[in-house]
Image (cartoon, rainbow, N blue to C red; front, side, top):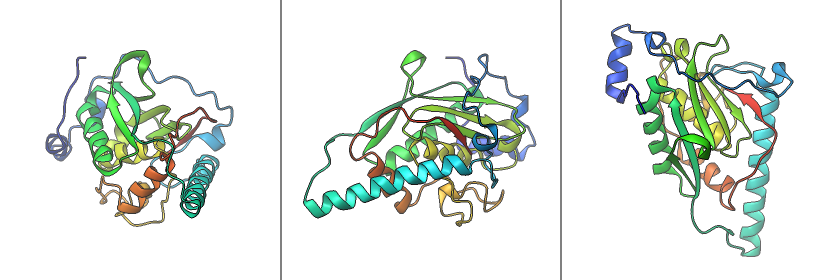
Length: 229
């Protein structure tokens, strides 16, 4: 697919030179319209806000249930029913300016978790799709937190915050993690909470363990879709 590939170093150099992502070619296919019917609960940005509260509560509930199930299985001596990683296929062809960074983000997650694997594809076989453009709400994830949905990457936000951190953070939502804006920069899911100076794109060991717990039994399915930043 035709694309502009930016390595992490190259992306940093572009930003340092003052070139905005808005100058990059816009994706030929617009992000699909969201149909959650509750914009005040569904729309959110990468920075702290109240609009994603409902979705974060859903993701936290999923996580709490997975942790409780893992604890119960450990008590009973049960092993996970899935013995190999679940594959989540992603398509970044509609986010050409961020292509290389999206691939780096997938590699970061793949190097830190074992029960789910992100694999690039194109076409109808994708579970997770990335888009780019301008949106006053900033970057966000729209999906069920089970590997399905879309991630929108906002140009303006990528010129203010570290784009690779934005990508891995939003991908973390797709893997089931909620926002934790009040936590430090060392926590990937703190997102834009620590401010633009935070560039850490890596989940810590606790976040990685939570994702592994969520996917230990083949975390696949369709649930309620909503946006989360």
